[in-house]
Image (tube, rainbow, N blue to C red; front, side, top):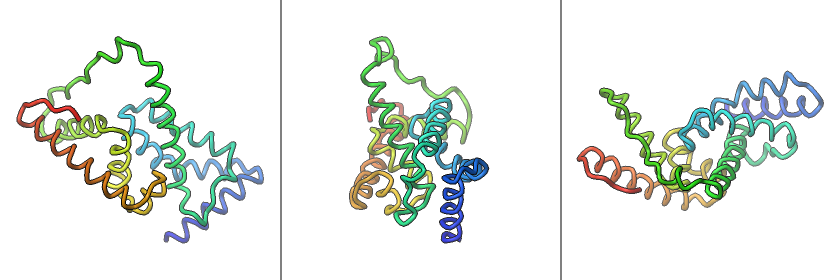
Length: 187
């Protein structure tokens, strides 16, 4: 099935480059979910994730020749584009964050019961991780990508992915344990 998807994506991009708008719409339909999930997990914000997803596909519209099917799958490539756009967004936000915004503390999860509260607590803990750790958690643990795929997207070595993932899981465990026992812990 994997080879079928590569051939399908290659053909869709060929048709898009030739001017077939329906082919681009099909690429979007097939891959926007993965790009959105990555952006949502990285930003913790649905609106920003939607904007980053749109930006990734707009970028593809203007650079359809940048994808090399011999280097990997189109879905992973598009997640990599979203990753770069996310990094750019963070660097711009850091330059322009106001003093008032910098002093705001994240709001605790609303009073809810059971799994919903746990999911929100986990989402907040992941969002609090430094970007280099958060992206490997999102790629490997949430998206289920292999270490090799994650390394390609994150543009680092497989060993780096493994060590960042190990560190991220330790930080998450510490953060979640302190939240459950009522002690504060900075990530």
